[in-house]
Image (cartoon, rainbow, N blue to C red; front, side, top):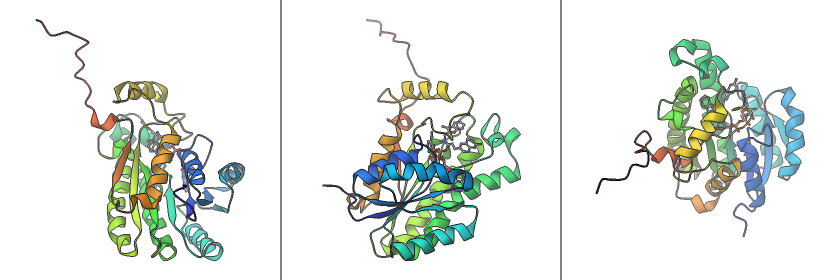
Length: 268
Ligand code: NAD
Ligand code: 0WE
């Protein structure tokens, strides 16, 4: 039995067939959900219009999250077309390139910090606020995508890590605020995946290899695997879970590194 039958879900962050949002969209569709899609900027419109039919089709709307009028227009349209909303998938993140490479303080600037915060953290709460009326009393669910850099200092992730920390705090405060309306709010902390956002990050392929080797399961993560956890969180099977960050990382975050004994056998 599909677990998302009759659920109407807004899917943001679709950009390519490698997007985490694409893996999520496939799982949501498979489980019977009806989707609507957003893109950021006119240049992305065609890309998303091409991908949407593979995910069962539906409304495709412009929503650059730095523009409040675009956020408002999306929820006005959803109100007209659907009359209510059962879920929102937030799969959006951005920091200017110089703020996610090299030394944290060398790359730091007020403007890049504010951009990262606006697009990667503020936007999730903004979607909760804009979608609140449509989601009330429907056992709705919101999810966002985060990364371990929110809670640990990792090389190069830098300003994005600070923005993800704010995003994870957003999850808890939004869960507190929206709980009274039956709306749940959770985050998925995914292991590294080679998406468009990740390509062009120097050394990413090496990082992927090192990551896989340091996981408990000794392998990398796919967007489809993230999608299955997302489908669960959007479903009523997760109705008692809110304010949580779930790690979908093959156990990486729960392992310690640097203690390798090089295969040394104990003496006698
Ligand atoms: P992606 O490039 O496919 O998706 C990023 C999305 O952010 C794009 O669809 C882009 O249009 C959107 N976006 C950027 N600026 C926007 C704006 N102003 N308004 C609206 N949308 C905007 O890459 P992805 O890896 O699928 O990223 C999705 C999410 O997953 C991000 O939050 C990212 O931080 C998170 N994440 C990624 C990884 C990874 O290794 N790829 C790991 C953990 C978490
Ligand atoms: O959240 C992310 C990446 C998000 C991202 C990617 C880009 C590339 C293009 C945000 N902003 C930008 N800005 C751009 O100009 N991840 C979890 C993937 C990621 O990004 C890293 C990582 C990992 C993992 C950056 C440095 C180090 C590790």
